[in-house]
Image (cartoon, rainbow, N blue to C red; front, top):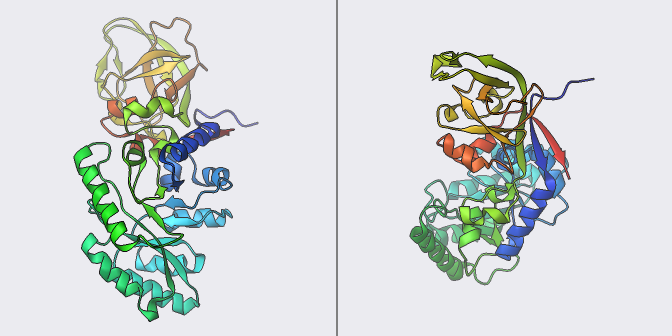
Length: 366
């Protein structure tokens, strides 16, 4: 019988359902579930299977590797590729019927050629760059793109949507409002009469704090996983992942003893030190070292001592006389927000979640 994992990520699918319902109700729009980066570290295929019956118009993924995983798993929800594609990937996209976003006339021509090769048609969206600077047609290039798509020889591309992306909806309100205004103007000018057409701009922060006059689809990422990019909305969401480990060892160490690599932590008094079976090899951020971070052991805070190592961390449990091997440890979750861990590590919660490595066992509950 296999032993229990040293580190596990408990995944609460009821919390996922709650957050998806919130996104739908708050935005009043259709929802594309963003499942890129292994569903933000939560498990791509498992999340897709759970959401496949929820009536979503698309699953958003970053690349063909993720799209292929979903197709191979028999997922029925249409798959949307969120970024530009490499020329070598496009043949597979056409054959599998995934929906790309188009950023250039050369992409359109390449897809048209591949559609002819396979005697197929392809649905696609236009990507428009309203300020992200990562991909898409500039707004003044949209008329040329539409004229190009209207050519008889390009009829194999069926345009089913247009989207853009917000670079600073959680940081720059004035710019974001101007971005919404520019995007809405573009849509009213060129796409107002289209039916069964998806218009999308808002990410998590965008759907929380802003409103478009033209969009009918939102693309929540972080919000779906129960983490709000805007602190004032956090209480309305439920964290989906709880990262846990266990105490493997408790030892009494004397004043002056060093803890972990580099001896950056020297004990100022005789202390009880617990060793916990998780480290940066599991995705727990090494950069949290020396930042005053703590973990929860049996629900009580215990300060991290010294540097996070690849497979283990140490914590001061002098104030927890009953601490013993096997005790449960929460690294982040409902009682210790991942946003707090990200702040200690000088990073963002997106990175903390997506860096949880495959050796951390995912345990799903409904």
